[in-house]
Amino acid sequence: MTTAQDIAAWLLERIRTEGRLSQDQAVQEIPETFGPEWVRTLENGHTGIHQEVLKEFRKAHDGTVQWDRDRRFWSPKP
Image (cartoon, rainbow, N blue to C red; front, side, top):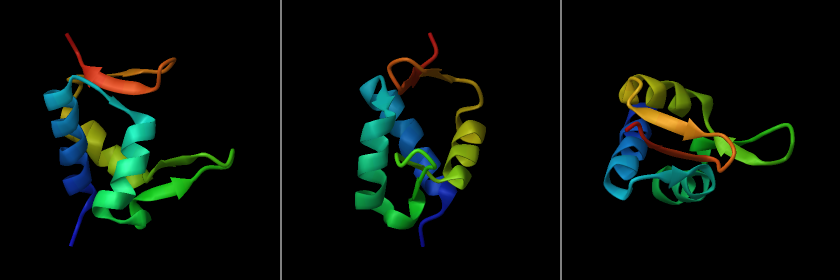
């Protein structure tokens, strides 16, 4: 059974191997890879990553990843 920690580790690995990961790409691939229960529809109608996954992701990267708010992607901190 997939856990939020599994998905957080997957996100972190993708960022480390590819150099960055866009939120749109993650939102598209998470349900395909792990199941639709790991994304949610936000109040504005957009699809987002489940809160538990984001919580585990923050713990997993422990400050080693940065978020580019304007371009909506994560990348390793220099």
